Each structure stands twice: as C-alpha cells, then as structure tokens.
Length: 106
Image (cartoon, rainbow, N blue to C red; front, side):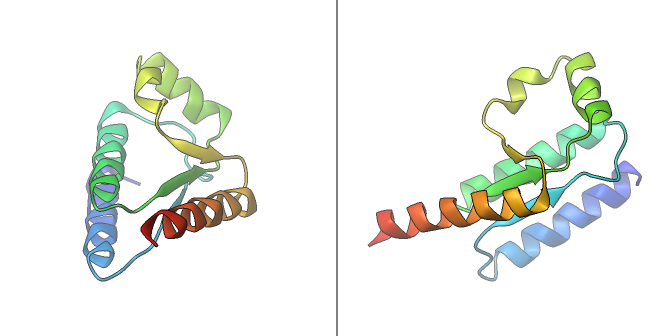
C-alpha cells in the first residue's frame, strides 16, 4: 500500500471518528516493512484520534515492521502506542480501555 493510499485510509478513519467512533484497532499484519512516511501518516492519525479521545490499538506488528521502526530510530515514538500481537488481544485491550473511559466519564 502506498503512502498516498494509507493517507486516504486514515483520513477516512478520522472522518468516521467525528461521527461517534469509540475506538480503533489498526492491523498491520500484511505489511512487511514500514518507511518513515507511512509511520508519520499513522502516527499523525493516531495523534488526531487521541486528541478526539478515541483509543487506538495496533495489532499484527511483524518482526519486519518492528525492525523497520527501530532502523528508522523511531522507537521513542512508540512508547505511547498500545499494541497487541493478535486481533483478539487487540480487541480485548480496546474493550478494557473503553470500560475505563466509561468509568471515568460517569
């Protein structure tokens, strides 16, 4: 997937988020490597969702993607990223985040 396609996909997510989205699970399973432009697009979208109060969980980060991120020197950018190995684990993590959010909003 090209950075342009990735950018338009995340723009669509942000548009949907403005209509009541509660959380996002972003799956990276088919992606083998990350370049800095794709990482920047993803980080900007995650940051925007965070500002909107919408939790995001990354799932399916392959060893190649993790190595690409480390090679780019972007590991410090990942400290705030919520991640899980599988989609099921990611959905469970998101559900816990949403429950915590609901408790704090009451």
